[in-house]
Image (cartoon, rainbow, N blue to C red; front, side, top):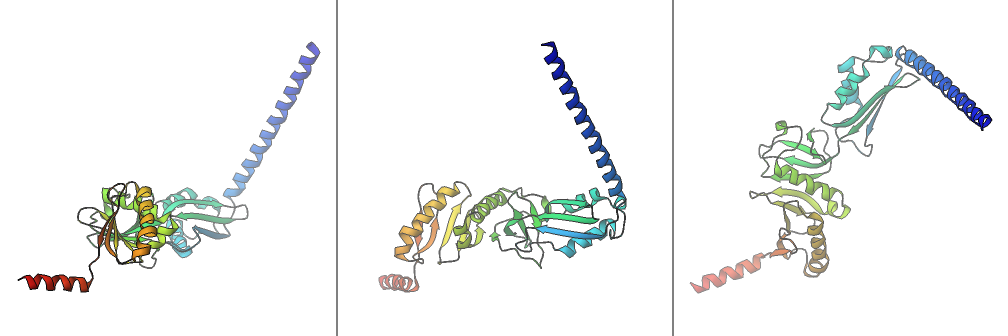
Length: 278
């Protein structure tokens, strides 16, 4: 037993010595890279902006201009002369930016990676201001040269852009929930072209097809409300036509209330009958 114990102890000591040796080597390599990294010249800048499926708010020139304002043109400078932390913090403070990372690669390339905020609704408030909201409620200022294709919301919306960094009113929070639900569903995303907030605070959707409007009321129980609406579309409007109803209300749980449209001919007949009675 004593021989076996000594053998195991020596094996452990040997393994421990190897691990210590590897750690020392890693620390030495890391220190050398860190030292050489600080003295490495920045040869060029590479900017990556996501998502790359389309321009939202920023382009490469916007980012390059911000870099110049923050630390000057870094090309040709030693890495130690440029505060990457300051640059990264400045990028993250932009209302259009969700996340950012800045680092210098071994071959001297400053790599700037940015993830833009993804807007889901465009707000136009009663003061005439226009701004966007993402799914987390962050406000994104409107830029005239960029117009993301998202659900526009108008009507009785009072909250202004400068009031807070994130949406704080009940109306905006309700709009975010509704817009996020629609954005996540391919069918509904293609169906609606606008949302309007009436004076009672009800959310009213305007579809692309048909002359009716959809009253959701608030943004609660949306899966149930829109499942009922889909059934109504498939079993009701498919047979009667898209223009039979003026308003379709989903406000009341478990039911759909439709207000029928009255065409010009019907209105004239009703008026003639009323006149004949007098």
